[in-house]
Length: 171
Image (tube, rainbow, N blue to C red; front, side, top):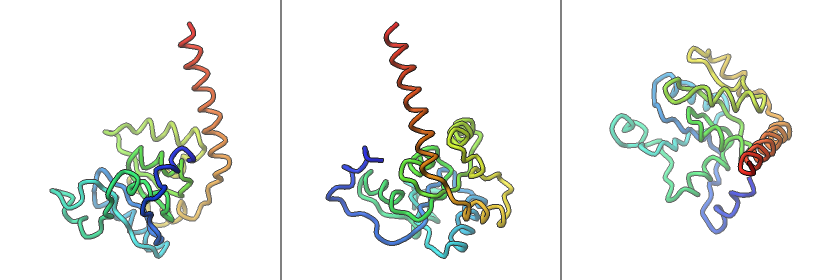
């Protein structure tokens, strides 16, 4: 997380509580999940979809967050109360910035990487199936995340990965 802090220095950051909603595949089911989360937490959705207002994303224009640069986009995640995403990057930034989240995978975009990282950090239950009920969604929303454990696991995996790379390069 500290590696990203310089990106926010001197930049306008988001101050109001919101749900960062980053959906690459805008489908009714995924919008329904976002709406269930918003209703349950009594917070506004802020869509971070880069194509809002264009083509099949036109309906999101009124709900879109306006961001001037990548740091503004990231600040919408960093300062959110919750994240709803179907993006691997949305998932990773939720983990980095310690934001509670739900994620909806997509087989065509590489579901294995979602399963892999979620399993690694002990948060597989945050990947919602396509038929998740309102109660299933709410259960995930209220389940706390042990961020210290998550970041300890990430740190351990990062160290093992660096050792592997160094060993491979030294051969």
